[in-house]
Length: 111
Length: 118
Image 1 (cartoon, one colour):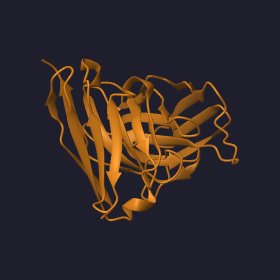
Image 2 (tube, chains in turn yellow, purple):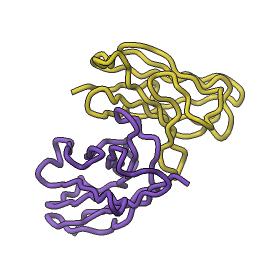
Image 3 (tube, chains in turn green, cyan):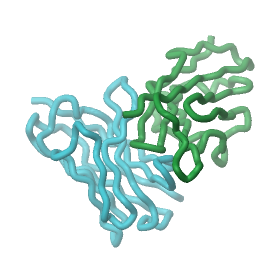
Image 4 (tube, chains in turn cyan, orange):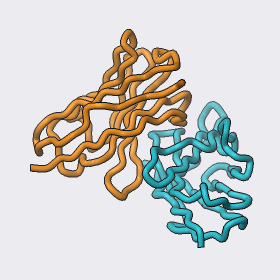
């Protein structure tokens, strides 16, 4: 089974400063069709998850452009260029190439 | 508006049964794979089961195989999760999620709380 490991567990950030979350998989997420099915979700307190990024770097409609995703193979990153108060929550990566498996989550909070 | 709405959560006895439903609207339900994803209190997310757009294929996480059954009624735009032989560790919020392609869930419901306790 694929294991998804996120770091850090907790990320205190100053408003307006950048933040980066790492996600590593125990196996390559490159599918036989050539695509890499790595997705990022945001879960604000008390809310359902919301998809932000799919296939590593494709931002969903309505997602601010301060969110970006990149990476390849087994190593991926979600970057927030300038953290805003509404970005507080838990962020999850998820691999969809094999059985859908989520990382353990990274809690973003304001310092 | 594209949305999915879960119902049917509640308190279940260990060894008992519960059935969750998910009503889809605003999109062509029969064209999409669907999944149930759960989140235990204070914990992360895990995919419990998924079903092909036409209902001919179903897949489950190991710990629910033989106990849970995912199904759908494309004529009524409904997704179901039948949960039998419930265990305390099944306690969680259960989300219905639309899967447009390779598990990249783009639409989530508000969730249905399932509590297994005597």
